[in-house]
Each structure stands twice: as structure tokens, then as C-alpha cells.
Amino acid sequence: MAFRRPLKILVVMIFIILVAIQFIPVTYTNPPVINEPNWDSPETRALVARACFDCHSNETDLPWYSTIAPVSWLIYRDINAGREEMNFSEWRMESKKVEHLVEKIEKVIKKGEMPPWFYLPMHPKAKLSVDEKELLIEGLQRTVSNSITEFD
Image (cartoon, rainbow, N blue to C red; front, side, top):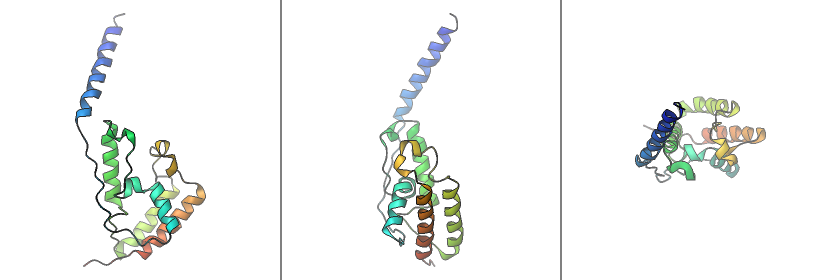
């Protein structure tokens, strides 16, 4: 019986904390699309949009739970990290970076690192079959190679 009172206090404290953190807002933005890659085909773009755009573009489709802290903080962090790594809406590809990116694309898709495992349960449309993964890799490799721009 002595155990129940501390447990109730703990549950109430956790509830209060969960309610309180809802007042720490996270603001998402979808900036305008500035420059997309020179896609090798509409099919490649469609696969990328389905599996990658939510984190790697300015066309993020936010789920209903993206407003609930602390999940909202994690989503915000993941979107920012994804856009920082590669953003299909603000495409800039220098020729010296192409080989590295082509290798990385193949590696992360084949290993199943992208899309991440924790993303797939709530976004089943992003789950790719083995054949779709191969098409995505090949299409992205051609797209990256076709989209080289030189910067001074």
C-alpha cells in the first residue's frame, strides 16, 4: 500500500510535465522550392517524393502528431537534419561532390537506413520494395549526375 502513493505522485507529475511541454512550440516552415534536380524521369521524382520528400525537401507533409511535444521536437530535428544533408528543393550539386553522393545514396538505401525504420510505421507509402529501391538508386544516380552545376 505504501508503494501506491509514490506511484500516483509520479504518474501525476509525468502528466503535468507532458501537458506543460505542449506550450513549448515548434514552428515548421516549408520554404519555397528554389531549384529541383534535373530528374532523369518522372518515375524517379515520384519515388523520391514518396519516400524522401518529407525530410529532404521543402515540401514536407506534416502528420497530425507533429504538433504534440516531444514528438514535434524530434520531427523538427529530423526534418532540419534531412534538409541539411540533402534538399531536393534547394538543389546545388558541385561536380566534386557527385561521386560521394552517388555512393552514399546507394549505401543508405540498400542498407535500409533511408527511409529510416522509425518513419515507416506511420508512413507506409514510403516503404519501398526491393525493385523500387533499385529503381530509386539507379534513378537518383542518373539524376545526380545530370544535375551538376558549377559554382564560383
